[in-house]
Image (cartoon, rainbow, N blue to C red; front, side, top):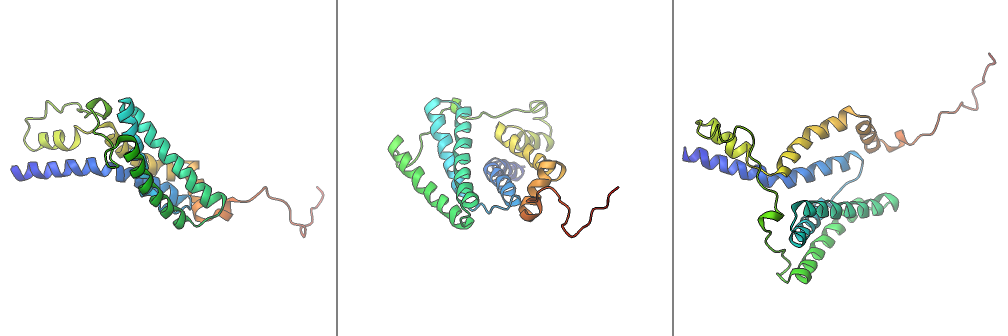
Length: 210
């Protein structure tokens, strides 16, 4: 039983800690399908994490921290797109440059703002997303095997974990069952196929009067 509980604790930590990686992988999926090699995902994650922690520490709100992290990563994505799409720069070089800038910028700003050696301060409970207890968690707690499995592994995560798990099937539906997804995949696989104007008759083709 101790081994089972240890395994559940390990899986619980895996699900929680894999959430940022899952969200980054989904972002990379959209980028790759659009034909953009996003080497700068690590830099976006670092800048988003720093902006989230800094905003949450400043305002004492987890939602403000989440918004700041999203905004920071979007700004880096726009910069990457500006370099690679607008100016046709090398996507790999741009992504590596973003990673280097993010690594240095977060350390410098963290040291300048918080004087903690580049780290952000520990967040109070109000500035963090709390654990969500799913229905029947208390009722099933005493049930052998099923109770610990439901209480430890499925219930008790914060909203971002459940949101990330829900985005996975949503991403599949958007990419393969919507018009936006079709256009996204078409642009990434063959940009010339979607860069066509209205059809016009060939000059060698005679038009017969009706």
